[in-house]
Image: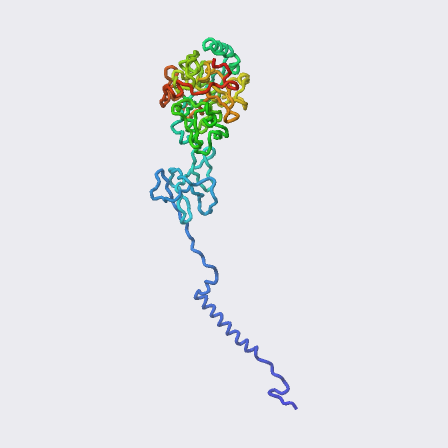
Length: 499
């Protein structure tokens, strides 16, 4: 028989689950009590969310800008607001970049800009808004400092040397001449002056036609050697020379290219001319050389129509001073015993044009802007009249010359006469006319409506500044020849013009 322990015949079950249940409820009660106490003390608040940052208020700067700079303003590199900014952070509120030159101080009050802390205030901020063509357009959120309109600055070597100008009013005048006037001029050339003029020499200046011009200005005197040598030295300072500095063409020959005919010397660094020629009109200059000089000082060559009106006025005179020739009013090759070569500008003040321009007859023939065509006047006469500001043919081989020269008879010094020449020699050493010069013109000054110089007896207009007139001095090219014999063949002065 098997012994029984405890209850005979039955096995007892485990009682562990009862003890577990008994311990669970007290533990739950204690844990909840601990959590409650922690919540009550605020210890768990730091685990619920991230810390909230303290907001930073941006600094607002009020700037009052006046015409007198604030002595307490920063002295660092100034800033200018532009319409084409470099990329910047948007939170700066304005668009800034350093300027190489100080900006314009404009008077403005109550202008506020929100700047990031530590950003230096700009020197100038102006509350302006401009639209083309008056200036720049302000970008959204930015301010524009207005820019002055570009002006043509005279190069430093020419400041104080450029010629005075006369104001010439706009209006209608008759340009050209008649066959009858040409016949009479040819007769005077042959009988009075002993020349060999032909009627064919004047055929390209008729028929006459009506021209209407805008107001313009024109230099009172021809450009001198002093002025032109200063221009050449300016070109040299810019890295060019007389051989290529005039729109890629030769400007003028020097002794290096033409030892027997030129007078300007060039040692590779500087240009010079004999002192006695400083006040004489520059001669032997190419059309490109004349054009480049005028452009350099903010001017231009006159049109052929502008030149003729400035020389003869509105009353149809044949010479600048009237209809009768006088050898005492212009430098031509008559009388025969007269010295060859130019005279100083302004030597004949009584030979001035109705607007006070000097040496419009004789001394040197003058380049104008127009290309030359023998048939141009016929074309203009067939246009509706008056022709408004004619500019000459579109393009030809030669350029127009006006006014005659020291190397021609008075026939060529008539204000209506046309000559022509190639704008530059084919080769820099080729002989080039020694009797060709120029003067510049410009559009009218918008601040004036009429000539600023009063008329004087004899039609001379007294310029605002006096003209220094040189006197004849032996040995300086005034009473002795300084030129080789005049060129013949291919010259714009027909052969036989000297008589």
